[in-house]
Image (cartoon, rainbow, N blue to C red; front, side, top):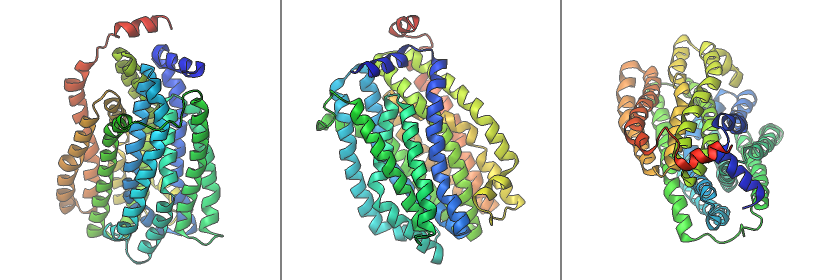
Length: 460
């Protein structure tokens, strides 16, 4: 292990957790803010250069994109967790195999994405509610996105390796460079190049290409002396896939959720309701990305300390990071809840907002304060060997909490019932995780640091 990596490992094991909250969360929030901006770039340019029909198409396309996100998560969650634990355990053999494992698995899942997408994406977009011109827009976008999926997946997965090493500042810079490429390319491809909504996908792929290249160079530099291109063993690939399956199934549940939501809106609403949900969904995603920033910053602390046998630090970091997340997110959440129309019209100037829609937006956006707790809990479970419980909770979230509510509530409340079902699902899941954590997970830890952790903290 290099001197820099040893110093970073030592900081994760011994530095005061409050200091780590600041030093890791700041770049992690910057990364996720850049992700959030990337999610909004295509919406803003499409809304201003094309119109609200393009936003409706993007909303449905993004729901379908969760299939891609699921396969991203399979690689990224598994590889990042395995790497952070390997760093904590000083397992050089595992460390030098992770990057080639990511390359191999990225290639495999991208072939699946392209093959399945070419056959099924067009009819799936129609089943999700797109018709006529919006269907043509959505399919034009998705063809380009599928073609560049290998870059999109590798950019995300290689970023997870930088995150696992605690190198969040470099990850932020790379993400910023990718976003810059997206911002420059998207309007040029939509307008002057005449690609329409497909140009928005081209901009996303261009940004992913820049980020992937920068991440690769950084990881190869960090792995000098470790034979970073050594072929991965079947055992290591199995470890990556066992942990990553929880991320895969969670993202697939989001895909099914999006499919059910837009399918229900197509039945009980109209094109305007699809466009409004598309814009609302993107704003909720901004909250998801901010919460993800704290989960990203927490992950290397949990992984390295768990690998080094310091459960007390893991527990205290989890509590402190959740408190910090609430403090940071409270003000923007309150501002958006107070004036949703102002924010939504920044995305789509021609999007009309009724009083009923404003109320529906507030119902759904009410879940944002619980998102950090949901995501940091799932990160904790994945990092300490409870990935199968993440899978089980994801199935409960979708099959037990959401589907029955989506079947019943729109029959009673119409379009508003869809928003009620979405809010109920995540608020109920937060309550379930709190009870589950206190009863099942908390006994694994002690609020008093383990002896090894105490000794390390005393030397900090």
